[in-house]
Amino acid sequence: MYTRLQKTPVFINFMFVAASLLSLFTYNTSLAEPLSKESISLLERMGREYLANRDRIRTWQGKIEFSRKLGKVGAEPLEEVEKAKIRFIYDGEKHHWLTVREQTWVTEQDKELLLQSSMLTDDAYYVYDSYSPERFPRKFLPILRILTSAEGGELSKSKWPGDFRPLDMSTAGGDVSGLMLGYAKLLKEGKDLGKCRTLSRTNNLVKVRIELTDLVSEYVFDLDNASSLVEFNSSGPDPSLVWKCKMQKIASVFIPETLTFDEVRGTERVVQEMKWFDQVVNEPVSKDEFTIAKLGVHKGDRVHDYRTGAEYELTDTKLPPRSTPSIARELRQTAQRPSHLPHYLFLVGLFLLAAVVSLIIYRRRRSAQGRG
Image (cartoon, rainbow, N blue to C red; front, side, top):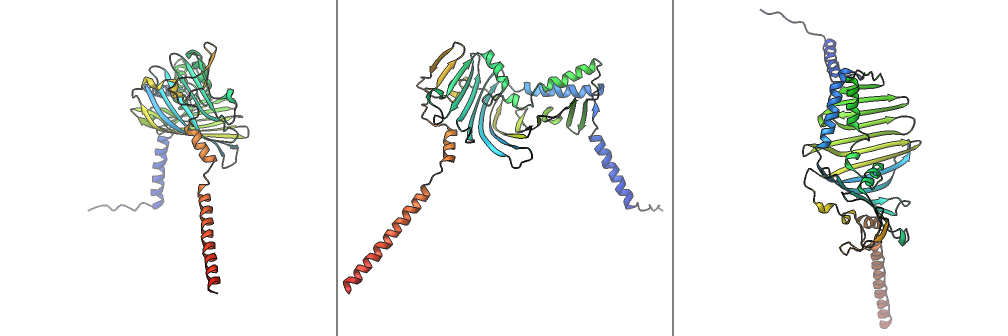
């Protein structure tokens, strides 16, 4: 004997499924709540994991494909104005770095700039700029500037294009870990941070939102990737920024795979994209990497040593002569001066064919006249 169960109406089943999904979504997604004592543990976790991941990077080498686009807000597509390849070496144990940024394509307006590089060692800070001799007279040809290490450390904070530092580029700027740990410390001390600072979590992603007058900043951390910062949004009257980074894991360290930087200033918009490849983490770095030859200098380049005020030209016979074109220059010349050889060969062939046909017709006419 058994009891027959009544068939559940379809709409009740649907409501049950919908309620289950809603409860699951509510569990995985929390509403933004003001930072409070309940936020302390998560803030500390993000700050410490983020900092620990960076500290695990003892050495770091790699390359980057870089592009920059400009245009008016709302205009699509944007105009691509620069492409470059960046090679970098970072030695965190010795606090040395070397970056070489070589442009493979630039606009006509900026075509004179081919290469920028910088290097920090115990002895000095080196900055090298290479320009096209077609655009500038001799006295403005490539120059190597040498400053003290301390001065270089300060100047490098300006982050000009030739002074690329991977650790700084893999964050949206500022001390992100220090900001999170600082909030946790204030909350522990019983400070009320108000309603302008909120936290929300969706699965492994945690968003910290800060509203100060007319400026809004949002930090998004990925708990599955050592609390790496994967997105940063800043909006206000001017400028606004959307920064996104996709991470990858190499040698137990999370480092960038792709990075985009989308900024709006007034009516102008600039988008920078980076694709990181050939990355090596925590492998020994040869001391030969940190020499001026690695900067891309050539024999005869001018030097201005700001430590002593001396100016001279490089005479090292081991350096390549200035007549040796760089990779970027070769690529640029190839792009600007396409080969017309196929067209010439076609015209020459056409001329020869016409000459042969004319010769055949001429001989036939002579032969016919002879028979007549």
